[in-house]
Length: 133
Image (cartoon, rainbow, N blue to C red; front, side, top):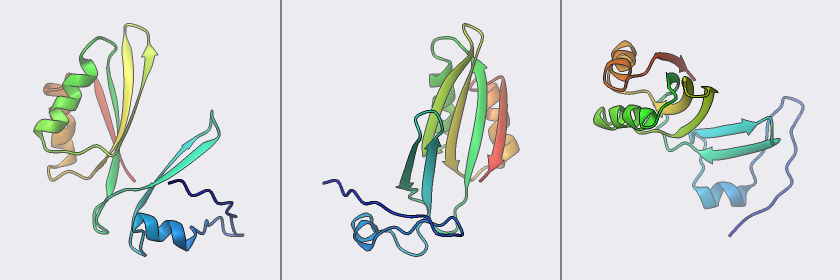
C-alpha cells in the first residue's frame, strides 16, 4: 500500500517523516536512510539503507571500458569480495570507449586501497575513486 503525504521542510532544512511512515518501515532514531536526488527529473527518493549504526557507506566511481561484459566483470569482483551494493548507476562517457559506474556500498572489511587494486586487476576497471559518505 502506498502512503502519500505532504511534508514540509523547517527553517534548518529538516524533513519530518510522519509516524505512520516511520512505523511501517521500522525507522527508529538510529536508522540510516539513503537519499537519491535526481536533478533532471526533480525526484527525491528516500529509502532505509539497511546499515547498522556503526557502518559507514562509501561511494565508488568506477571508470571502465564501454564494452559488453565490463560492468559484469566488476560486479563479479564485488561478489567475490562479499561486498553488497546498496545503489548503482551507470552512464556512458564516450560511446565505445569509456563508461562510469557509480555505486554505494557499506565500507568493506578490506582496506580501500586493496579494494581499488582488486577492481582494477580483477575487474579491469580503468580508474576507481572512493569517497567516504
